[in-house]
Image (cartoon, rainbow, N blue to C red; front, top):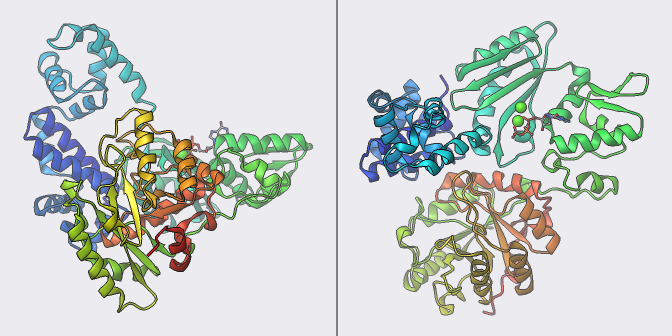
Length: 576
Ligand code: DGT
Ligand code: CA
Ligand code: CA
């Protein structure tokens, strides 16, 4: 039974919620919630780690106890503690917390007073106007609950890194039967959107084996519910809650179907309109002329060719100008992972990282990098044991010594320095100037009004040693909204001062987002795609950054870390 990171995260999140509703120790609740978050944004499979006998306690937020519980989940698919909690209250009680306005205390009250144990019963109670009379609720809250219930159905999107793991195992499983020829995951997944609503898998099957493929699909271990099973299309829901659609198509239609189901819908409509102008009908079966003869459909290239367009990369298919660019022969040469020469943001044990300088350097060289910037936190971030000037000076010395022994590789001396509320940087210029570069970040006061937040960051950029603005909006996907900032002003300010923006590649950040990446390119601000690695495996997150960069139309020349250190050092203003 394949247990994915998403399943483990889901179990821990549920444990946290149920514990919280039962009024458990807040530290215990936080430990489970934190573990769920960490695991859901890992780029490697915990199951694989266990198979390779890697220690889970290396993972952030995972101690001996949680590591043991993870092993239990991977082995059995479930956790006794969760079963126990579900028995004590109600198995779906945690869902109440998803409704805005309902915290653990109120959920507990609803359970005890009205015997509400799930969302259906919650709706019933609200519609019968029973909630307004409960102590501490009222009519307004009751209305808010009803609104929240309406909204809920439309949310539920899964982070790309989580979906990637699921998609890989599922396609490998389908492939192993030898009944399929081609397998491709289309939809938003292929467009590498930061979150995915559902998976859309396309297959072509060997002669006469279509039904076999459909049956194999619905029999996948991870399937919780079969929504429908047909000859050419089936839909299932996995245990993580993710929906998967499988469609079997004929080889002559494969390209047309791939194009259709890759989307986006807006892009499809624009391409179809171009077809209509030429009297062609384009759908998921092919391109047809006015006598309904199929004139293309085997490949995507063919489909584009029939409307006089070059092939357009999936990441660009959002109808954000790619059709116009393609018509004019001005499509960008999107950046690729192999063009990345190094990483400009990482941490070590000295603050909140998990490995030493030496280990991080070795890992970066293994990836094939020419440089790795070590940018530990600064002192203002006390929870991460941030560096003061003295400890930073020691780190500089250590890096200088290590660099003597590397061949064709450099550790860059850097810091992730806090931008304080007044716009000053957390460490004095006298030490910042000794560094190769600075990565500057907001870590507190995320809720300042838009004008103040923007000013704060621009004032920081006024410092001549400011180089890269880290995770510029501070958003955490599905968890924390972006700070209110005037991004256009920030980019203007950055360009004027010779500063740069980061595209943080952590799967739960991906900050800048695709739209802002495109904006940066158009405004002439270069971007560092950085993993913000806290461990050696995190360096692999670079691919998610590159996906997002591609969605933002970035080319190698728009990205700082495609450049050699000789070129880069000229861009990072230093006069010593
Ligand atoms: P998602 O799942 O919400 O992350 O986003 P998508 O883009 O994967 O959307 P989905 O799963 O609803 O549909 C997959 C693709 O199928 C979509 O990108 C384009 C195509 N498609 C779906 N419905 C329509 C439609 O009504 N018209 C056209 N032209 N294409 C459609
Ligand atoms: Ca989809
Ligand atoms: Ca779908």
